[in-house]
Structure formats: C-alpha cells, structure tokens
Amino acid sequence: MCGIICYSGSKKAIPILINGLKKLEYRGYDSAGLSVIEDKTPITIKSEGKVSNLEAKTSNITTNASYGIAHTRWATHGRPSEINAHPQLDNKNKICVVHNGIIENYKDLKYELINKGYIFISDTDTEVIAHLIDMYFTDDLEIAVLKTVERLSGTFGLAVIHADIDHKIIIVKRGSPIVIGVGDNEFFAASDPIAISDYTNKIIVLNDDEMAVLNSKEYFIKNLRNEVLKKNIKIVDKDSYSNDKKGFESFMLKEIFEQPISIKNAFRGRIIESEGVSKLGGLEPVLERLKSIKKLIIVSCGTSFYSGKLGRYIFESLTELDVEVEIASEFRYRKFTLDKDVAVLALSQSGETADTIAALKEAKRKGALLLGMVNEVGTTITQLTDAGVYNHAGSEIGVASTKIYTSQLVLLTLMGLLIGRYHGLSFIEGKSIIDGIKKLPEQIKEILSNAKNIQKVSKKYAHFRDFLYIGRLYNYPTAMEAALKLKEISYIHAEGYPAGEMKHGPISLIDENFPTVAIAPDDEVMDKMLSNIEQIKARNGKILSVTNSSAKKVIEISDDIFIVPKTIPVLQPILNIIPLQLFAYYIAKEKGRNIDKPRNLAKSVTVE
Ligand code: F6R
Image 1: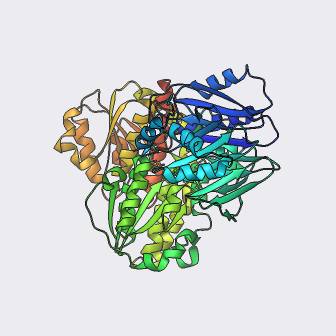
Image 2: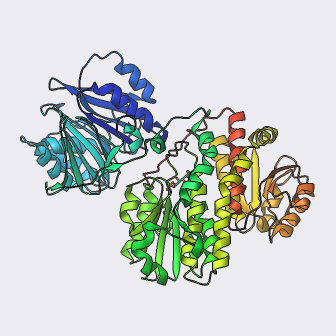
Image 3: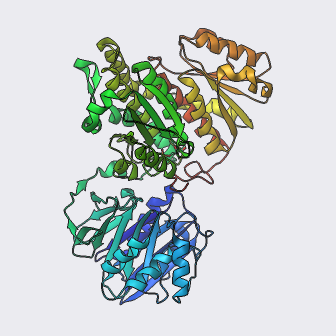
C-alpha cells in the first residue's frame, strides 16, 4: 500500500524521488506526490493514478532542489484525488508531510485545530500532522515534530520538511516500516529498501518510536526523548532488493522461476544432516520455551493463511503439538485465553499486514510466545515478535505471492523438524525430510522445464468461467492456494475444496462447463481422490490433474495432467503448487490481465 521515499544530498532530488516511487508502485497505490524545496520555497506536485502521470507533470519544472519527500497513496481517509494525495501542507505552505499508516484520533485533533483557526483542505488524517507541527513550531523542527507525535495515536511512518530549514528531513516511525539509506554525503529514507536500492545498500532499520534527522552531510537516529541512539548500519544484498525483471515478461513469472533459488535460500545453512535436525538461528533465543510449548496457533491472511493451513498438517506429522490455524482478521476479535504453553506464529511475507499485527498484539496481551516468519527484514511483525525466521526469498514484486508461499512451506517444515526432534521424531525420519528438502530445487527445475506444455494446456481452459480445485490432507490447502492464484490474477471464479466434501454440496455445480483441478499425487489418499474424480467424470465434468508419473489410474482417468516429481507427503505440496501457479499465470496472460498488479489488490495490506 502507501510508500515513502525521501532524499537529502547534492543531486537533483526530483529524478531520485520519481525513481524511488516507481520502485514502490508494486505495493499498490492510487495517487502520488512529492515536495522539494529550493530557495526556501516548496514545490509540491501531485497527481492521481500512475507515478508516470506525476513524472509527466515534473517534466515542466526546472529546479535544482536537492532535498525532498515523496509518496504513493492508497486511499484510506478521503477518495483518491490530488487534494488528498501527499505531501500534505500546513496553511502557510511551509511544512510538507508524507505519512504511511492511520491516525486514529485525527477527528478530535482536526476539531481542535479548526477551533484554533486552521483551515483543512483535504479529507486526510495526514493533514492534521502538518497543522499540528505548525502549531508547535517556534524555531526547532525536531521539537515541533516530537510534540506532534506525542499527540498522535495510531500508526505512522512519517517524513517532514520545512521550507525555512535547509536540507533537513525528519522521519518518525511507529508501526509503519521505515529504513534510512546511508550514502556518501547523501541520505535517504524509504518505507521499503527497494525504493533506494539504486543508490545505496547501507540501511538502518528504524524501530518503533525512533526518529531520524537527515541533512545532506550527516544523520542522527534519536528516540522520542530527543536523545541520540547508536544504531548499526546493515549492508543489504542489492540483488535481492532489485526490481529488475531480468528478461522475464513479468515479475510474477520471474518469481515463479526463482523458486529453485528461493527454496535453497530458505534451507541454506539451516540443516544439520549429521543429526537429522534443523538449526534456525532466529528461534534460538526462545528455544528452551519452544521445547515446552504444547500448542501452536498459526495466524495469517490470504496466501500466508494457506501456507499456515498446510503448516498444521506439517506440524501434526512431525511434532506432538496441538495446532490451530486461524485467519488473523477473525482471530483478533475472538474471545479466547492463552497461556505460557502456547506459541502464536504469524506468517507474513510483508511483515506489515494490519490484521496479522493486530492478532499478534491480542496474543501478546494474553501471554503467548510470539513467533514470526517474515520475508521483509525489519518490518513491524519482526519487531513485535519474541523470535522468528526470515524467508530470505528476495523481493516479491508480483502482487500474487508465489516464491514466498513455497519458501514458507520449507521453513514450516524446518520448524516442524526442529520441534519434532525434541518430541518423538526419529533421526531416520529427520534425515529423510532433509534429503527431501535438498532435492526440491532440482525437482522444481524439472517442473519449470515443462512450462511450454503447461501453457498449452492452460490455453485450453482459459475460456471457462468457474473452476473447482480439490485435494485431500496436505493438498486441500494446496487446492485453496491454487484457486486463489487463479482468481486473483485472471478474475475467474475458483474455489478450493476438500475433495471429500464434494458430495455434500459442490458436486451439484459440475457439468461440462465447470472443470475441476484435482491435486491427486500418488499417496495414501490417492484411491479416495480417484473415487472423487470418478464422481465428477460421471457428471461430464472435465478433470485436470496434478499427479506423479507412478499414479497410473489418475493419469488414465484425467482429461489433462501435469506430472510432478514424487517426494515425501509433507513436501509434495511444494511441488504440486508449481504447475498450478503457471496454470493461473498462463490463463491470466491469455485473458490479457495486468498480472503483476491485479485490479483492487495491493502487495502489502496495511489497513484492516
Ligand atoms: C495472495 C497474497 C495475499 C497475501 C496476504 C497476506 O497472492 O499475496 O493473499 O498473502 O495479503 O500478506 P502477508 O503475507 O504479507 O501478510
């Protein structure tokens, strides 16, 4: 959703800000804007729609301004419009503010400010920040920002400049991610390191209630008592934060093809073969407590919820934990008690999903151990949890998650292995899981080498309006995730169902116009899947199966098949989803959809 990029240095600021905004486009937004200051005069430009609209407007402007702030907005308070786009300014047009997050008490503050004579121009919650800073400003911008922040409740990552204060940018973080980029006599701030990846790989991750003060020569990180803090600079791998399509026609296709690497990155350095166990450094601080937990609750949304659902089968197979999985937006409002024996694990590629954060806060209040599995380093969930693991899958730009889903499944298996080895899981079982994980990258390459054929089959199915996806056990969540992939990028209606439920209702939908994708590997429930497939065939339903070459009966009965290599049941879903990601992709392509940025969706969902 919303994005921030700021620059203070000696180069022309506008091209740097526009470039940063373009890199943030993948997060989803509906308007954009920037403010730069030259000779104590702010130049503010905003536009609805694409960053390219904003860029076109800036092309008429000649300025050497070398500091400024910029924003992509995803409307929460007030419709998408130029007036509501950020930066928001005070009434004297001196203070410019960009803001990610939501100011919950903005109405009270607005009322107070109106009573003091301030005139509101926009419908945004952000505008109160600009007026409050003006109200508190005498001659020290830091003090005015700190006094303002004291008055705000809610979440924010915000950046402020003042026309009379040369090159100074003040940034404050509470709940919305911000990193500071350190260059040579130039400094950056961004809500996502990708926005500054062309300029520096040295970043500082701000924690909640920290402030950064940048100018063109130096930077300070402070707490909200205005005391300077010492923080380490992190060197990030530029490649993993790049948003270059590397020759692929879209980011989603690139990310599907990156899965052999992202999976390797998920298990690299995290297995101890000689002991048949995994080693997850991020969980070490809580290992003793983890050994004694009795129950694990996985909370997440969307694709991360489906990997959580699979996580239940994984943990039930490898450990003796009692496992529950719940959609974060439901969990956060339920009445429940938790105790010290319970761990709550949040899965989130972005680390910023508002509902998942709220669910974690609820669990924290009730005393559970909080764990996270996150791809984006330093984000809110990583800061909120007691311990966790990173996916290290690199940036995922395509809105529809692919490589992070499979990375989550590998890491869930490694977590299950770690805990399971303290329970009843034997060395031999542990070793066979490790052997299976190590083979995954090559097995995925084998599936990907068949992409042309998958595309050919997909074209045959692109005209259908509805799809059913069915599977049992591990492949029930796989069916749900595969259906989600199809619906989000092709806009075709698709439902994932446990195959055994067909006869309890959905089978009435089946006819020659309603195809079924059956995920039916050669496993202990294959015969049950075969019966379900027979029932669909008997009603003229078309069947596309994902299966293994050894599953002769499934191959014979299906109209079309995607063959995937066979692995142990706990890992099979990682292979089964790959052709179905491609199937969704090629259908969406056939229908001419905007695959990387499907309508109405954002990459990081920071509102409830
Ligand atoms: C779908 C997809 C979304 C996200 C969901 C949660 O392809 O990506 O369903 O999985 O919005 O996001 P994270 O994982 O960032 O918490």
